[in-house]
Each structure stands twice: as structure tokens, then as C-alpha cells.
Length: 254
Image: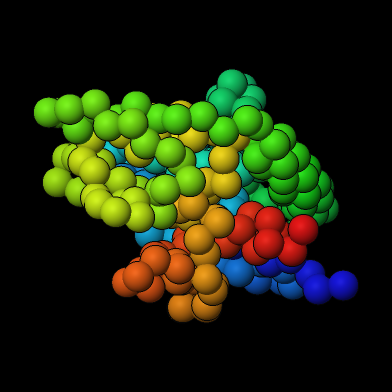
């Protein structure tokens, strides 16, 4: 059986501690390291760019604490946020980890056996998250179709979900691409996704909601990301983020 890879990111302003964590993670065969962050603000930016599965982050970092960075990342996460492991030199900060439901915390200097227990928790949590996500998708797709009423600012458009190819935000509006036209609305992508629960729509990227019934092909791109091509007349190509790719490929296997 092929080993599932885990994309990990480190956020640590102390160089020695950062190098120690890199050393530990590089020994794990299923770990792929993303670029490291040295501040909380840099971590948020790197998360958006690389979407790691797990983040090892120091509680105290310059500019933005690890706890504050986690809160901002959770808000930006397209579907489910990454797993978090707090690292700290002070045992008192362990409570912060559990208050935000971090998977674990590690005390500096790192102990190899304690680190292995953390990795076991990460692998177990990722396996459970994948299973729960698949069940959620199966449940949603079995619901009864309905019509949508979309306000485009001038009229109320009655729209069948089956007519939608994909949706994306553009210039502070939401573009809904259908068989016949592009409808603009002031609703958010998240609001549309919530209204389309029960249909074969999937968030392939934080900025794209796609009707999976119209997917023609899925092709590798770079850095673990993929592209998908739709069956519309323009053969539209849309991005698939690395974190979304895992769920997307599993859904088409079933």
C-alpha cells in the first residue's frame, strides 16, 4: 500500500529550535516539508500559499502569537483547517494548545520518543478526518435537488443547481457560471456552497466551487497541486489545491 504523504510546516523564530524540528521531520518517510515561517504573519501567508496538513508552531513569536496565527488560519481554511502542534519551552503554555483543540504540544528541547507519540497522533487524526469527510460528502450528495433563487442586484434569478458549472469570487462579486450565462451576485462563495449542500459541488480551491458532474479530467500541475478541466464549451481549466486534491481523488475512486 502506498504511504500517504503529510505536508508539514514549521513556524519558529529561534533558528536552533527550527533546525531541530526540521531534523526530526526529515527522518519521517511520509513527511514533505513546506517552507518554514519565522513570524506569525509570515506563517499565515505561507499557509495560504502551501496549505500544509500539519503546522508545528511556537506559542510565542514576534508580531503575532501562535494562538492568534491559528485563529486567522482557521478562518482562511477552505474546508477543514490543518492540524496544529504547539512547541514551547514552558509547560504552562500547554493549556493554550488544548483550548484551540491542537492535536498535541511539544516541549523544547525536543525528545525523540515524545515526538514519535505526536506523529502517531497526527497520523491517526488525519486518517479519521479523511473518513469523516468522505461520509459527509456521501450524505450530502444523497439529498433531494431544489431550485435556487439568486439575487443579482436587479432581479431574482431562478436557477437549477444542475445548470451551474462553477462559481468564483471576482471584483467583490460572486460569478456563477452556468450553461447559458454568467450570473453575478453579492452573496459569498461560502453562502452559495451552503445553499448547494446535497448536490455534487466541491470546493476544489478556496476560490472555486465546482460541479463535479461536469469534470472532464484531472491533471497534475506542480508542487502537489492539480488542475481540472470542465465539460463546458470553453473546456475551462480550474485549480485544485493540494489539500483539496486528496478528497477529490478519493471521491472519484469510489
